[in-house]
Length: 391
Image (cartoon, rainbow, N blue to C red; front, side):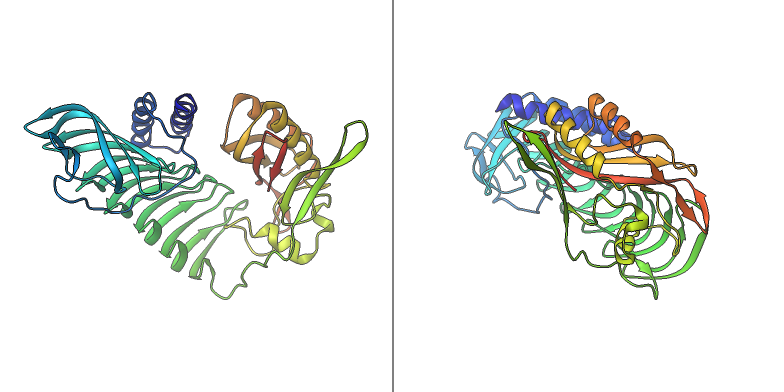
C-alpha cells in the first residue's frame, strides 16, 4: 500500500512541475507533496474540497501532546510525529488522522502550542492536495489546491473554499484568472480556452453572465455584448445527447469474438463531419466555448473510430489507466502539426498518441468560409487492464 501511494504522490508532483501554465506556488506544492509521499499510507482515489470543521479546544492528540484542530474532522486519534512541549505538539512535524469517511489524511506543518502556524501542506485521503495558510485548522488566507482530476487553483482561500482572487487551470487546460466564490468563477475574470479563443468579462456561478468580450478560436475575431447562462444572449443552448455510440472490434481467441473498445461517444465514430446530422454537428461544435456561429471545427475525415482502436491497443499494451485529453493541432491544410496532452502523460503515451493522431486524415476547420488552424480534442478514459476506453 505504501509503495502504491508514494507513486501517486510522485506522479502528481511531476505532473504539476511539467505544466507550462502552472505558477511557482503550484511548483512549491509539488516539492511538498514529494516529501509527504515518503510516509503516506493511503491511496488517493478522487477529489474533494476541504470542509470547515472545528474540533473542541485541545481535544486532539495525546493528553501530553495535544493538537488544537484539523480538517476534515477526525473520527479518532490524531497522530503527531514531532516534538511535544508543555503538553502540546510543538515545532515542525507531520500529522495524520482518519476522517469520518474512513480515509487517512496527512499534513506537514509547524505547530505552536498545538495550532498550525504559517504555511502547511495537506494531503487528503480522498485525493486532493493543498498547501498554504490555515486558520483554526482549516485552509484560509492564500494557498494552492490540486484536485485528483488535475484541476488546480492558486489564490485566496476563505474557510476552505476557493473564494477571492485566484488563478485556476481546469482538467482540460482552460486557464482562468479573476474572481471566485466557493470554487466557481464569480465576478470579473479572464479565461483562455484550451481549444482556442478567450473571454474577458463577467461571470456568475461558473458561467459567462453579463457583459463580456469573446475572442473566437481560429479567426481571432471578437464579439462584445451580453451573455446569459454561458452563451451569447439570444443563442440556442447546445442539443442534448439523445443516445451514445460504441466502437466494436474483433479479437482472435480461437474464434473471432466482438470486443467493445470504446463507449459513451456522442456521435457515430465511423462517420466524417459531412455525414453527421445537423444536431450531431452542433454537438461537436458545442465542445468549443469560443467557436463563432457558422464556423466549423476540424474533424477526422472518416471519423475518429480508428484512433479509438489504436488507443485501446496502446492502453492495453502499456497498462495505462486514467483520464487523458489529446489535442491535435490541425492546420488549414488538414495536416496535424503538433499534439498536446492533458491529464495522464507518459513518454510512451505521448509518442504513440502522436503517431495515432497523425495517422488520420482531417477536414480543416472553417472560419467564415475559409480553412483555418484549430485544435481537435480526443477525450479518453483509458482502462489499461482490459485495453478499453471511455469517451
